[in-house]
Image: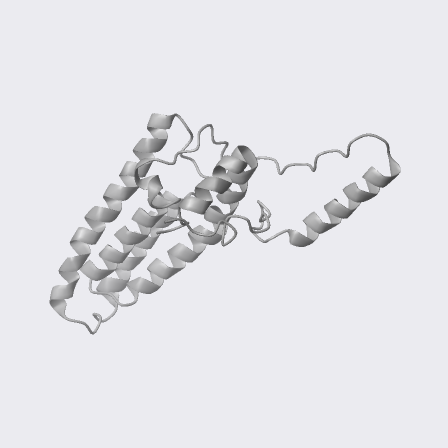
Length: 200
């Protein structure tokens, strides 16, 4: 089953530096081109595309490792979570599944010959394998692994780290990557968004 492409894939492009929607700026650009069309002969020029910037120095795997270390420290330093001790062992299959999904996604990128580095130029749109179920399976795998780690160390506070990691990845990487993919692949990416959800 597909999802509505306008839900999260056809929103105003976020600014690649701040991650904030740029609807106001696009509106002013649109008015400028309408004015140009009315006062000059010939077809209106195409709106300028956002340039690809250099990827940030701190990437999602770095945030993942920092979050994993924070979960471990919180589990050691703060009291255990008030749930049944046997529940902690549910974290082990979650860690294994999350790591497997992330590795599978990275291998598909390598097979397609496209860059795995976030916010860099993509040479291929990967839509098969685990990408049939999520547009961001590697991030989903990281989040699942962190959630499993929080269960293993019996830390309720660790789930705050998981939530913070998911929020940071969405704001700093996912929204910007979607803007770059729309810019690069156009209608093909819009159709992919209509079939596959951002997360699950």
